[in-house]
Image 1: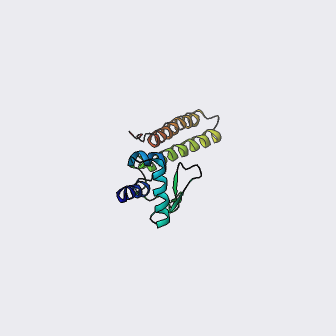
Image 2: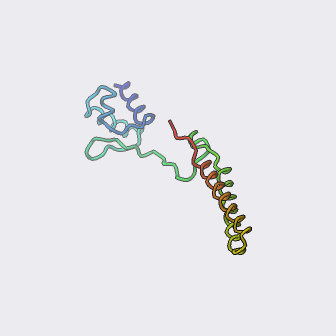
Image 3: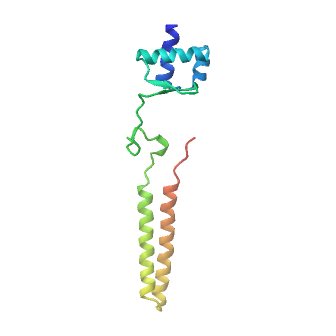
Length: 143
């Protein structure tokens, strides 16, 4: 009986199980026995929590929920560690080239040499922006 209680504490604390049915199947016990063991462990203070009204789950009350937005580098999965800064910089440079081309086209409209130069710069800026966006989007998906 003591061994079953120790395994039950392990299931609740270390494996984070809450379903009494799953706990009963893991321990090869009846669900009513698991409920009585959980109630005893809660009164002894070895488990902090409560059994739901329908008797199907045991919820721990000593769980701390991590605050969102405060992740450490260890919390980020390996496939998400991807430096997008070169791609962002390349896309920004391409946008700046397109702005310069637009200004050139607006100021020197009517002069064929500057219009051709502005159009060429516009295409170069577009290709540069697309290359930057490609670099940002080529992160590998998890497998």
